[in-house]
Length: 123
Image (cartoon, rainbow, N blue to C red):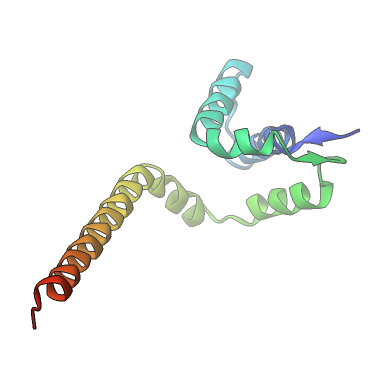
């Protein structure tokens, strides 16, 4: 049965959510799980939209099993570290945008200086 890459990723999310909840001994209602999945879909909307165009023969079981195994191997410190990064991600993305903007500004200034030197015979 063929599925889209989007559907495969969402199915993997369901399995990994259940695995993570079990590892953390957390019980979530179906509504809480649905809310978490909705937030996942919002955060990864661009990727999920692109994956609508990718047809897969099936969800790669070995890949998802490997991800589940990775969850099993997480130490408590790993889990705490991952939780600590969640609120940092938007700030880090904003910093990256700022760096890109500044680099673009610098390239524009260098271009204008170079053009002025060539046009007006500067040193």
